Image 1 (cartoon, one colour):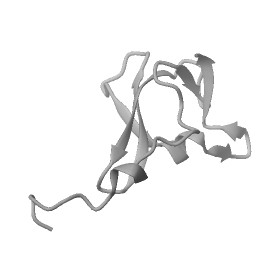
Image 2 (cartoon, rainbow, N blue to C red):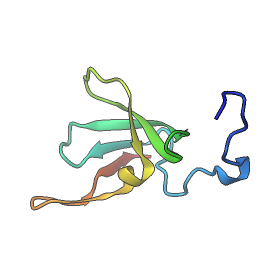
Image 3 (cartoon, helix red, strand yellow):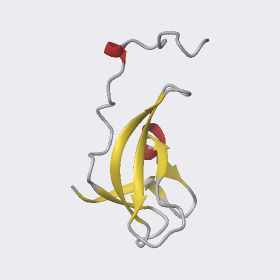
Length: 92
């Protein structure tokens, strides 16, 4: 594919998934109450044809921004010590 070729995805096919977290909402990771994050945007990864959540930590971290697939964001975690959502909403 050349740099000047048209994108393979048609505009009408690109719709933000309804199960995406709301931009500006705050969440915590299931592993720790202190691991809180703010959703910055919902972005489309053209390399994987996947919607991703762009989010930032609300705690001190060397990593300033994270991206995770919407599917992974909404995924339930099944471990011996925990069974539930990966992220829990704390603020709309």
